[in-house]
Image (cartoon, rainbow, N blue to C red; front, side, top):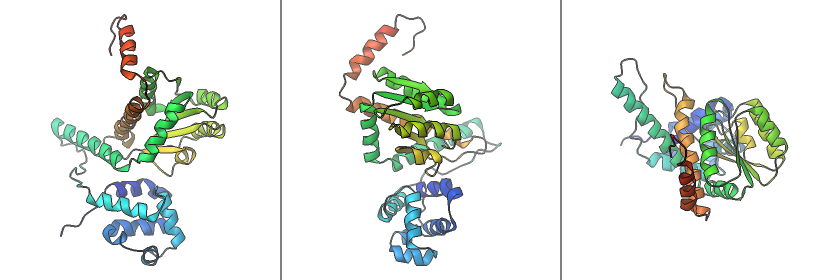
Length: 288
């Protein structure tokens, strides 16, 4: 019988490994070595085999982003049931243009599939509720994340929301300093490790602002500040850095929030978009 393998759980472990303790590494090794056996074991059995404490297992599960061991086991089971038919292939100097294109498309498609596997219904509902009820939404992105934040800003501006785009830490700090509890910040940051960005977000959080983050690493400083994180999963090519791959996933998460808001907000969205389109047609070189 062919041995089944993990994909999404493997990527989570890889991304979190730098923050793992020795106990975490032992448990992770046990999960990856024999996941089918791991899901059958009781907590005490896992503790005995891995040589760690029961408390250590609880901390590991939390670090992986799950509330309980049973939730983590369910995620492992689902991952094992997925047909990982999209193999990872790195780009080489000998690849033809067509082969290179296929590998990039395949890799990006896998990143989107990983998002689908990791999305949680309650978190998505809460994101939409917060966005819908917010008196103001600040879209934040620095460096390479600016384009994603701007895309979100333009989308929700069309919805008639009170929005602002912040792509500078100083402007974000000013905005955060005068923020109110009924406001929301949606921040896009691949690593979530920018010290100045996180300091400004912490000011907003202390003022009662809800922080929604699109990021990759669940143990980053940003993930600890944010109220809700929507995660991307990506592995970089040798010729294509990881953040560039995750950008496709970040745009997709923005689209999910936008479409969900349109569907559930109760507003006459079609008519609103039609009015905007008609008004813009008076300008030359207008593109919808």
